[in-house]
Length: 199
Image: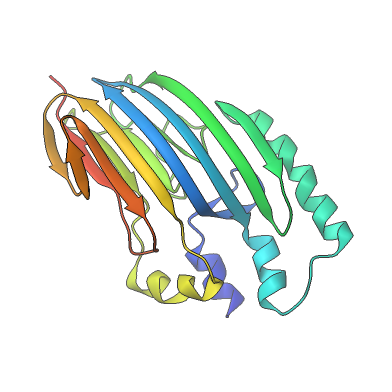
């Protein structure tokens, strides 16, 4: 795989260990007006490690130690309860974050939780829009990215559940039960989009 394409396909950068992609995700989000609470468990993969593996090489102990040292990056983020290096470029992350979208364009995302405005490189974003609504969405991939990412040998898998109060304007949830919307990720083609009106 062309490494320039891999870099272009990266969904988020600069958050913890350079550039990462989600391998698994289990997210539960509650929205009440502009207040949000998000509990997320995820295994993320460093693309620095993927570049080595895709070149047919193995990670050396020195590389593994360098990747492990990136655990300290979690201290710079909001709500990280766990960010532990496993092996082979994988980290186990647990995030519990809550707050208020107190102004238009205010946002919170994963895995980059430090910023209070939208970060285009986040995989998952909760954002207050200029029309007063709140949107929850995952990164939407271009057709080019959809062609390249399957070559990595994995795709994000797992559930995302969003419980809302208020009028839902748009939802592409696969399953709805009352005010709870659910998605089940199994490929790079999957995408979350929810738009809620706030009185």
